[in-house]
Length: 443
Image 1 (cartoon, helix red, strand yellow):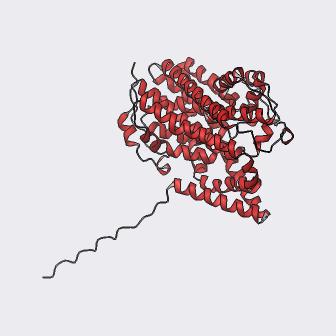
Image 2 (image 1 turned 180 degrees about the horizontal axis):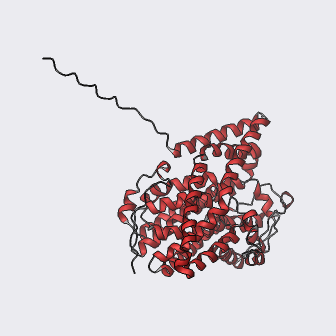
Image 3 (image 1 turned 45 degrees about the vertical axis):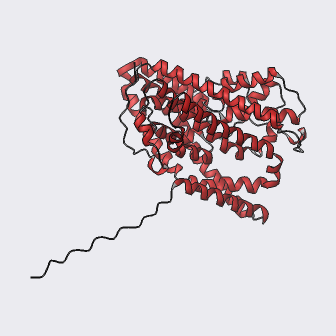
């Protein structure tokens, strides 16, 4: 009797997964290459194509910003009703936002005073020009309240959208169960927006080619060389905050392993570097923050709040360095009073940056407070896209660090989840992730 033939074991499928970080790095390399070709070989169609690719990617991100901010803030405020000691958590979050901002602006000032970024650049006041968008304390205070409901969304005034969402959220809390149908709808719309934004996020490697390529093709290395010291200062200052201050706070205050934080938060940080938008990165930031062990109810408040107000890169390091840079170009002496004012503006005026690409409004707010010429903003516009990548990455890292610190201090951080977030590729951080069991917030 012959033995029954056995089916051959299926051959193991060789699978190769191109990780998202590698896609981003590839996009950076291709962007530099194509940008250099367009500039050096004077290939106009290539430069135009790169610009269009970058513009479309940023426009897709901005398309979701207004409704995303509104519903994220609305839902985050109403989610606080599920958390014990919500007022304490909110106040602690704001306190740590302020503390880290003060540290960041101090580092920015120290680096600027040590390196004199405006000296020897060859730039003159005549090279500057008035910015299209100004910022002043009067504009900031009066601009919070919109004149109507529609304009903030059509003009993408994020600060006014935050105001409307906060009013709606507080009103919903006061109404209680009567507002539940509206809240259910808001949560569903927010999920829909996050899903749609995720599709845009997946295009980030292609967008990177266009954004980096355009920067190189438009400005070239010669112009970038004039800002070498200033550019290095922004990158070094941001790196010191992101890889020095944050790990120190995580190790000493939160008493957790800083390396675990960066392994878990890296998907959001790398996307922020490319997209140059804290708000556009917000869904990923919130997801990785939850995966780091922060309770979902608290993360859904802290991350949207941070995405519109917590800007250590754009609103602390950068304005401090820019003020010193512009003062040196225009030969204006800064003293102790001016440095204190820079710190004050950085802590109080961060909301003016509002999570969008660029930091022009925040910079004009700082310059107007110090009495420096606003034409100085024009000196920095050419180099701004290169600077904005590192600034935004620092912003988003801080927006994830603070909830971890607060959660650890309040005893609500899930240490097992934090330890398990040792490797969180962006491919896994999707809206379909199952909800992690929330950690009970201590009374």
